[in-house]
Length: 421
Image 1 (cartoon, helix red, strand yellow):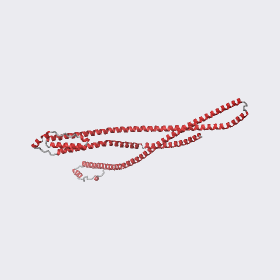
Image 2: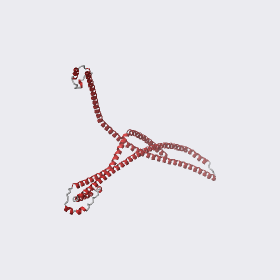
Image 3: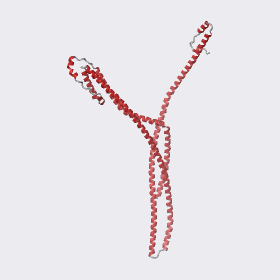
Image 4: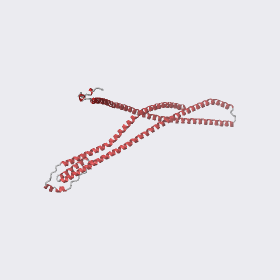
């Protein structure tokens, strides 16, 4: 019964394997068709990838450049505030101090003005540094109102500090540009590495598909071998059962009859017969145990083969599921490529229409210019011919009156008045 149940399970597995093979063949055909479509649409695929990569690179560069631009804007605003403060200092009136004031404020002019806070502090903190700078500028302006020479020198120092800060800002901008260029190179190298990694992944995927196909072929061959082995064992088992049943009945009857006929009368003979029957029974029992052990081993091997088949089936189902997901992804990308292709075709057709109209107008204009130039050439030829005819007539004239009559003829006001010669 266990062998028949295993055989039924194996037949069911065989049917499922056939269905699975058919399904795999259909999926392979679909994958081939999709690969052909993708190979046809490969330029658009590369264009879409390039657009995506360019978009990602622009996003990364924007993330890098935005803080730099904000910092540059802040530095420019601080520089403008510093220039406004300097202009305000320059616009303040400078009154000539009286002698009394100069003598009273002489210690003030001798005292050095408090040092201005450096403009580099503006880049760190905008509000307090600007207020300190304005306060220092006001102090220097109040002192410079009493001493013109000191104020000019202070303004010169302020201008030099502002120019130094401007140079530092330009240097920082140049360094930020260099950093952006270096980061661009790094991003390009990363893009190339990602492309190489994608190619290697595609190669590994193709190798994995080939290995799966080889494993499927090996499993099919092993399944066929197991099926033939189970069939052979069933035939042997049925033959053994058929031989054992009819042969055991006549032998039992004959033995009973022979025992009844040839039963010994003495006790030693009976003991010897008993030992012989025990040995025969022990030999039969050992033969039955050997047969049962062989059947048990065959059942275990068949069970292991069945477990391997189920594990292989589960792995194939997982691979089939993965291939199905890949197929869905490919179909989605194919749909997006089709829409992108249609959009590009529409844009190309829209772009070609004004170009065609412009080219047509240009051709018409060139044709008109060509016709006018040809007409001018023909008129010039006719005019030159008419002038040559008149000159020849003047040469052939014998008297001065004939020459005057030729010269007094109607002047050539219109080229249409010339007669074709």
